[in-house]
Amino acid sequence: MLVPLYEAVYERLDVGGGTRVLGLGCGSGLALLMAASRGAAVTGVDSRFPERLELARRRLHAETAGPP
Image (cartoon, rainbow, N blue to C red; front, side, top):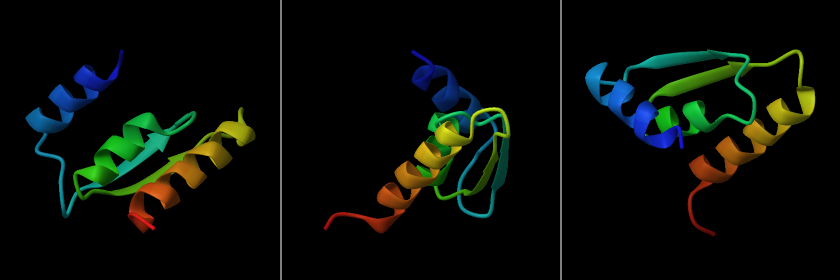
């Protein structure tokens, strides 16, 4: 549901290589994953839900590792 919103915002802001994105309260990291897939360097923080932050970390590492 939020994917089209993030895509529109990242397109408008020209998020890509050379962009740094900080996600405060990043949850499971969807916005950060989308920014990373455009080439941005991302960092996420979520002190309220450490289990979601760990999920975001695993998803990001799986995304950046590429196919097996």
